[in-house]
Length: 130
Image 1 (cartoon, helix red, strand yellow):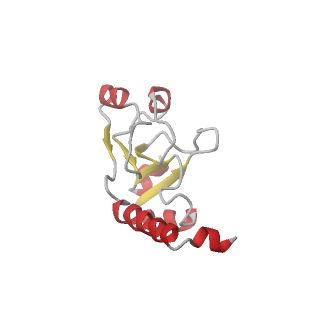
Image 2 (cartoon, helix red, strand yellow):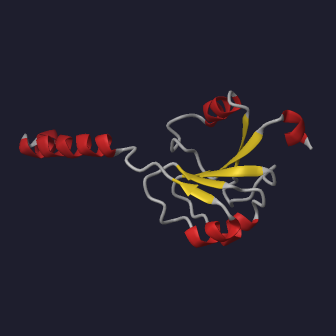
Image 3 (cartoon, helix red, strand yellow):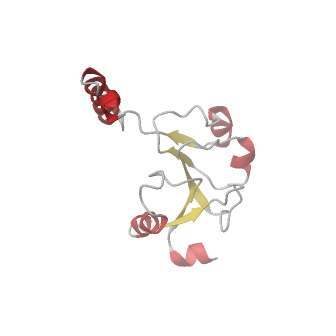
């Protein structure tokens, strides 16, 4: 089929891994530069050209057995987030699908925000803003 002729792997995106901080076109170009084709889920989680996807990327959307059943060649669920409690690990294990996340990716940002809020309260910035 088309995928074999292109010689690339299919990456199925449930949602943008950058939570829309990066335009979809830029995400596609980045993956294409590594010979990876991106396929986006529709709002109802239906797919176009999904049957060859070997990787599924999600941030917060649920990955359950019903979704996994629509992706017969899937080998990896990549969670672009620290938590993975929205991924059915048992269903993935039964299908031989690995699950990966990015623990600690926002640790510095969370600490910086915390200190920013502390200084904001110490200096009464919210009250001064009113």
